[in-house]
Image (cartoon, one colour):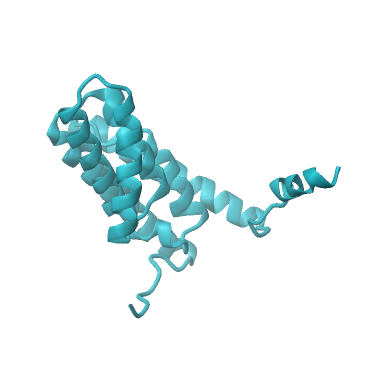
Length: 170
């Protein structure tokens, strides 16, 4: 049985405990951000929401101090990953393996540019599934991610949470 002791680590929770107030603030923040983005979609008639924004809200409202939750990472990560998805999909249309190439390339480029945002890793899949035009990069990706970050900024100010994080020296 000693050979399976490494499995013990799979059950250790690294996430620190939180309070019911924090759970509610996080959930309500996500609800408001996606609600506002959906409302903006309905009012404008322009799609401003995509599936990976749900994951962005988890980070924005549940882990606002994470480097992955900061505005350059949220907006830049989605822009980079979607642009890569669009280029690769246009170059190799109809091939399922382009999803793997898109995700791998997006991870590498986000890391190189220091705009890693884990939910954006799904964006090449979304591009492959939706087959969007180049304007998709602006609507929903850019404008939608700006709405999420703007909502998070205002919401966290109102709830007394430090967001965005203050600049650190390079």
